[in-house]
Image 1 (tube, rainbow, N blue to C red):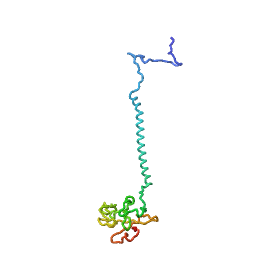
Image 2 (tube, rainbow, N blue to C red):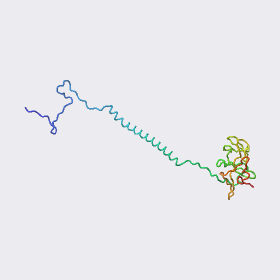
Image 3 (tube, rainbow, N blue to C red):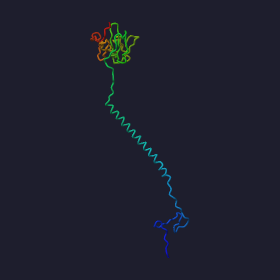
Length: 214
């Protein structure tokens, strides 16, 4: 008896088994094989991967920013050693004007800029260094009491800068003073004259400690 061959597709035997086909020897209703479905957990994991990558990128940026800032601050501190802070002070030699610019008494216009007072008396003009001879504080001129008073420890000086009360050991120093070719007063605070007790007083002996006013 002739055997029938299964139909072929492209020269190859072709057999198609339906999902509901019973296998030989099985009883009961045919069982359909369900189509492949995606697991919900894997789908959520796949959707969460882009957010996780973004968080990692943000953390990397944050870390690199902190490292860059730290290195930058250290670099600036290192470079600062090559550019030391410089204190610019006014020149110790300067002009203050003509003798006629000053009236009788104490002139305080140069106290803040050069730490001096210009004092004019009827017969002379001189410049007092604004520094207490006790501990170096800057006294104040009290016009109502006609004296200089140190706010630190109470030393008192008369209008000529001579001490008369408090712990100051000697009068305040006077600065070098002279007239230039134009007739203006030139002060040099790097050259000071003193009048220590019991010794020679430069206020009277050195003609550059004052100017004679005619």
